[in-house]
Amino acid sequence: MIRIDIRKRDGLARAGILTCEGGPVPQVPFPAVLDVETVFPSLATRGGTNVPLSAPAEFVKTYIPRGPDQPVTIHPALENPAQSGDVAMVANWHTALSNPWRYAEWLKNIREKTPADTLWYAPGTALPSNIHILCYSGFGLFDYIAVDLKSAQGLFCTPEGEFPADIQKAGICACEGCRAGDLKLHNRLALEGEVALVRYFIGQSKLRELVEARCRMNANHVAIIRHLDVDYAGTERYAPVARSGVMRANSGESMQRVEVRRFAERLLSRYKPPKATVAVLLPCSAKKPYSLSQSHRRFQMAIAGRAHELIITSPLGLVPRELECVYPAMHYDVPVTGYWDAEECAYISDIVARYLALHKYERVIAHLEGGALKVAEMAAKTCGITLEYSCREHPTGDEALSQLSRALDSERRVKDDRLHGMLSYQFGCDVDTKSMLSRGHFPELFYSKSNIQRFSIDTGNGLLRPTFEGWELIPQGYRVTISDFLPEGDVLVPGVVDADPAIREGDEVLVVGPKAMATGRAAMSAAEMKNSKHGVAVRVRKIKKIAI
Image (cartoon, rainbow, N blue to C red; front, side):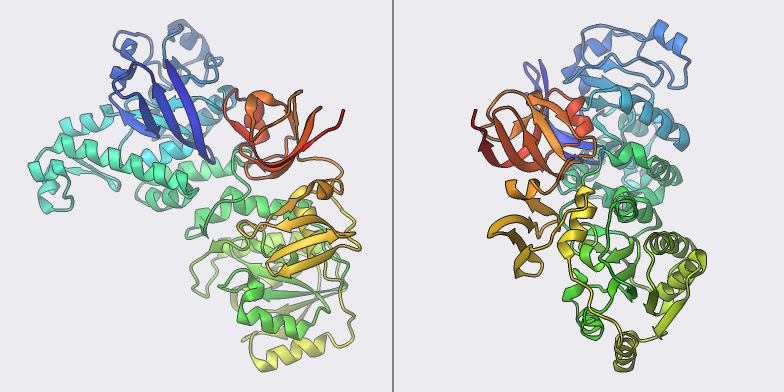
C-alpha cells in the first residue's frame, strides 16, 4: 500500500514522506531517488509507458496502459486517470528539458488535471544537474536510470553538468565512489546528495534561490524558469504569501518571481493610501524595515508626517510606508551596485507610473539620486506629472534634508494609519479604522478598539492576525467553510466544504462552520483544499464554539 504525506510546500515543489507498506524501505522522505522497480515491481513488465510527450491524443489513448497498479501513467494529452494519493508517472520527461516552451506548456497541462495530493515520478530523467528544476516544477520521485546511463557513457556527473570521466582524478570530489575510482557509485551519490539538498531547501522555503543559482549553468533551465514565471496566474495560486527568512533577489529572474509580482499587483489593485495631497519619493535602505534604518529616521524627521512616504526600490518597485513590514518588503535582499540596468528601470518605473496615475497627488517630491531618481523621472514622464526636487544627490545629507523640510513648510500633517493600508493590501477591503488604538513597539504592534484587541502584526512575515472581533470588521473573503463538526485542532482537508479562491498558503483565514468558528493560517491554497483529499487545510490558532 502506498501513502503520500505532504508536509511542506514551496510553490509547486513538495516535500514529505512516502510510505510503502511491505516494501524494502517502509518510509522514504521525498523528493527521493530510488531503485523504483523494488517499490513498483509491475513496472518491469508493464508496456506502453514510453509514449512521447508530443504524441497526439488518439495515439496516447491507444497505447497508454490503464489499471490499478502504481504508479499511474499520466500524459499531457490524456484525460487524468490519477486520483488523490496516487504516484503519477510522466514518461519521457527528459525530452521536455530541451524544449523550454513545451516544458512549461506540458507542465501546466498535467498540473491542472492532476490532484494536488499526488506524487509525480519522472523516470529516466534525474541528474545532479537538473534535479533542482524538476523538483521546482513539482516532481518528487526519481530513479537512477539517467545517471547510470551517464556512467555507461563515461561521464562524470556534478550539479554543474556532466564531464569526461577522467576529471574524477582531479580531486574535485572526495566521495566514496571517487576514492574507490567507481564512476557509477560517484554518480549515484552525487544525485542522492543533490536530492537531499533540494529537499532541505524546500523545507526552508528557499528552493527558488537554489534554482536561480543552479540554473546559470544551463540555458534551457533559465528559459524554463522564465516561461514558468510568464504563467503568473498558473503559478501564483501555489506560491505562499510569505516565506521564512530572507528573499534573495540576486538575478534578473528575481524580478519576475511570484512574490515580487504579487506585491506589485496587490499594491495597484488593493492598497488604499491615506488621504494626502503630497507624496515624497524616497530611496530604500539596506536595513529592514526601512523605519529602523538611520537614513529613514532622518527622512521621517524632516518630513514630520506632512506627506505620504513612498520608497522606490528594486525589485519590488514601490513600497508605501504602511507596507514596509509586509512580506517581502521587510525580507528582501539585493546586490547593491548603484547601477540599475534598462530592464530594471523599465519594470520599476512602470509600477511607479501606474501607482501615481491611480492615486492623484497635488505634489510629488523626489528625494532621490542615481537609478531611483532616473526611475522616478521616467514614471513622471509616462503619467504626465511634474516632479519637484528636494535633492539630486546625497539624500541623507544635512542640506538635502533641510531642503526637504522647507519644501513641506506649508503642508498639514497626514493621518498616520498604517493599519488601514495593511488591511486593504492583505484582505482587499476598506475597513473603517477610526478610534482604533495601537500599542507596543514598532514593528510589534497590537490594535484595539473599545478595549478589545482586533489585530496584531506577525513580526515574522509582517501580516496582520485578526482576532474574532477583528474578523467582524472584514466583511467578506478569506473564509474557509467546514462541515458540521467541532474542530479539536487543525482543520483537515476532508472537513472543508468550501474556501475563498483568494486564499493562498500562509494567509490568515476565518474558519466558519455550523458548530464552531476558528482563526488560523491556511496550510495550502484554496485550489489545493478543493483538489485534495488528504492533508492539513488550516493551522488553527483559536476555536470558538457556536451556541446552538
